[in-house]
Length: 350
Image (cartoon, rainbow, N blue to C red; front, top):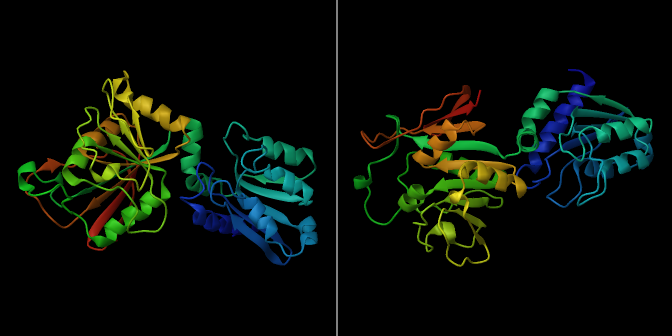
């Protein structure tokens, strides 16, 4: 492996550590390397904190060594004031002579200006190292800025005979999930929730399962909960209305109930294209990733509109014999693996 690729690979390993806490900033990884190897390394702090470049530079014990070092970073250093000063300021201030960048930043306030500033000040800049791997890691950030919508992950569990849920008559008692997958798969889903900014479900899923849509089986913050409930059928004493996370309710009524501080009612269901209106609302509010967990009608809507980027489909060992058929995904199968007794298929939209 070439030396630049070696250090960029380490940057990608570091970048994964910030996933779920940095948004709307991207989770970037950075390494400062000199003749003797790695001098400092870091990744993006939680939103509002220092960027990866700053953390890596601060990790160098002898600042004089920076004058003969190379900074490696997965994404172009920022060149504008946000919550923190531009990273280009610090790079030039510390006299770092070379910067190796995996991917140019598509953000309108960056988009090559960081590279141009560094080069204009005499810094050697090398771009495009492990560009594909960096684009894969930063796919949420790239989709948000290029397509003006969040990166969308569809997720569902189906039985081995192809059903998403049993027939309504098979359910008894209070609303609760009918589990298809085992505990390891359910814990993995909670991990995924901790890594994304928002999660969406439809009316029937909430009425049937009364989900909390939280991360109680994993560490990390709960995502923004979005309930698609055009007729406002879900009672406000259901778990999706509790105060463990912010909740949006998308509806199509003339008016809605007065909401507590953590609940927002949005009458997007009255728009000509309510799903498009939701995408614009999410983009306007800097929501860069969204998990869609169902139910069948909601998932089919996203599939038919080709408004998705990944699909993560669990198949459990149980059978229902009859019930609600699972959606059929048309895309590129990228991976299949076992999770406990379940099979997990990962798809990408072509």
